[in-house]
Length: 406
Image 1 (spheres, rainbow, N blue to C red):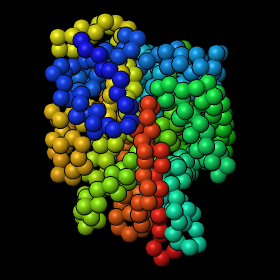
Image 2 (cartoon, rainbow, N blue to C red):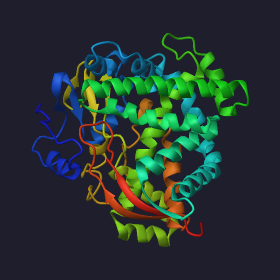
Image 3 (cartoon, rainbow, N blue to C red):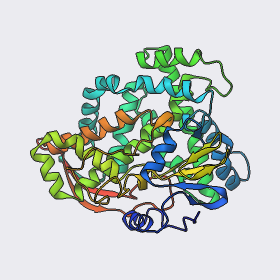
Image 4 (cartoon, rainbow, N blue to C red):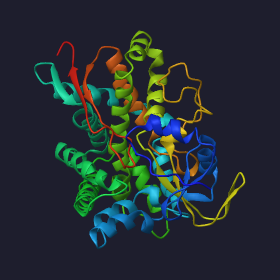
């Protein structure tokens, strides 16, 4: 089995895709320290569907940050311990279902009016009395949209929303493949404050006028009697809202960038709003907000001619699987006429992203309001892409935003 080599993570994804799929050998690759690399769409989907392939355990996920700190990062550890992405059987399935049931496609449809209102409110605030402003669409606009949506739903005040947004940025430093001790300290402190602020706010509202969704989540959490269960529904929601804020804002920005970078496609969507869903799906395929995550085998797993031993860590390259030329013709091209294919943007199987439907809805709201004239967005400067991180994220996306008639 050949080695992956040392790709320029994030520097030029299209070139990396062209390189890896043109090699003579196609299949699992060796990474560092015994990690296997899965990048082909079929391999990734097969592993996603295998119930003996699950989340990387907490000790492994926190190891790098703890090594950088030279001690336990208690804030980061608490955040990760309450996040379903580190939970393993038997806790993983029932804990994930608490969130997944409440964010199912049918249930999130009830949030559509709230999402549209939040998008327009934030846009108006950003442009101010003049009706137009230059801003960073990702950090100024999309981050506020996601924080405002969740804050409105859960009863968080403006100060709590702002703190959560700021701390999510600090926490994202822990998503880097390698980073200095100073970044580890910031990520750990950010995680501690993020968890404290959101969990306290959620629990406060639980005693006042809680959303029925939160009441149901609390009841289901209390029914779980397993080691490692989050102590409160506030902790469970707070930990998983990092993805609901950071990953969602990145997805919004990536979709908008895809359309800004392909003005002919944007014109097509302008003239036919029925294409909005396809445009968002294609944008998320091409610029998946999460480039890769880890999995581990709980038993021996056979993949084609390869037997993967129990306890083997596997890096799942979601963004590369989304550009597999064996599945997607012209994989590096933004196309609205692309046949529906098996995307890996939100993972799959037992580890599928619980928030995939709401993330898609918010991105569709931004694109719909943009394409129907509610807001106007013009590109000023984009990029570059962050390197050596789990997120496929632009460092900046400078735009001029306008709200006609305001």
